[in-house]
Length: 602
Image (cartoon, rainbow, N blue to C red; front, side):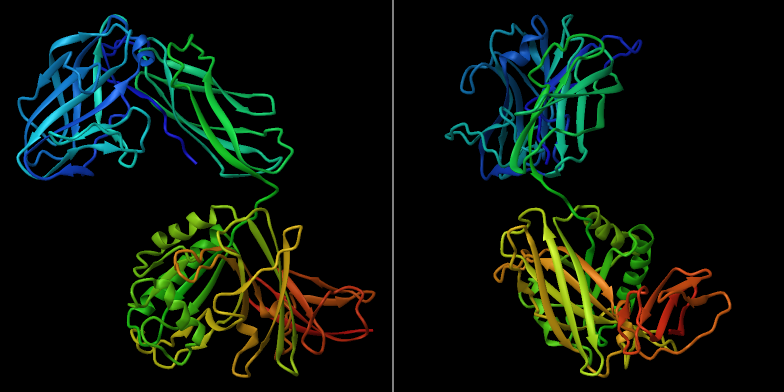
């Protein structure tokens, strides 16, 4: 959430003698010295075009006695432009109080001196602008950034009226000021941002960007945060901002907010310059809004790949994805949940109907392809690039908080081959436009390919993350309780051809709009391995480094291991304490292997 400053003053350094030396000129405008490479505004035919900005009386008051020496006119193109004149006016349709004409026109900045410098009195605001003529279609007006008040006025054509459109941004126009009365201290707040949704009673990060728009170096200032109903919060910032320098600073506050509320307004202000009084306070404050929520959740990203055995480019795409997953596992362990749909480029023996239905997400007039990838269904792309570039896409998603949390529990009846999955969750706010849905997908790893196009000869090609089944292609609508929680249960029939030891359960909560493929974004996901609660075909493996012992109805492990799971004789996972008498299988995960031990509890 970022607000644009209503005025940006920029200093141009002409000579520097010491850290506190005076500058000989300043530029005054809203565009931060930026000029566009391509124009957005234009008309056809021979015409006269005008553009301007307005500098208020307050903004000019600190320049009493100084002069506007020249005007910088930023143009997005010079094509078909035949003349360019800059001017100063008190009214848009008024006479030119001062003007200057360009000897030649160029794309980008045109610094044009006025025939006679205009002396600023500070008694009125001024329009600063330019007029150009064109012999044919032209898009000469340069606009940048987001619209701010007084930042853009245009007149398109001889018989047109002046207008101030908001959709194009700010005109690239600046007045160059010279004189003996250039301001010493003026710090401008360019932008301020914080989290859109603030979890109550937690630190609130705030980023501010400031510019020194006066002649003397500033070494410190205070930031005041005001929220209605609570005392102002003041934070100090040390800096070293010389003339025209821009600084970005992070502060952290913990506002004494006690109620959940949407659209809370906060005013951020720069106060108490260390060097002296700020000579213009109109550019010191910005407002921003945020929502107060009860909590946020760590996000797990849902990665989906479309791939088939008929696709010759898929082995490259899949290998890149696997390298990406290795990177993510180092940086975000356990937070990337992956599903591969065998569809997009024809079908193969691993294709299921739901994967074909999901091709609708391509949203490209029925034309689909493979490989294709999605990050939380925020978009589909085909070229994986490098693993690092692909990881960046997922990192951006992982770094954002989620507003729903999910947990998975499951039981498996090995005789009936019925898997019962229960997903529970909690939300901290309304996070999607449509009723949220819960989806549960089953995937299987380590499946040997039959005939993979594009695979290296002699090397067995293995499919991983293969989608096997789901509760519904687009999930089921969640029935939230009054305390914003849900519980959903679904039963799956596990086919005998599936290896449950290689299977995973992935549950995710998402938006869904049957008319808009871009409105199906996944808010959060969770994964459980099948072996977390059931392990099949266990064989005893001895390893002198690992010892499994029983102690008073409790199973304990000694040695070097990462984790262990205890299963009863039916293959169901159990808590390793207060066990009944009988035989148990213990799966121990070490650094290099998975070991199984059979023990007797008496």
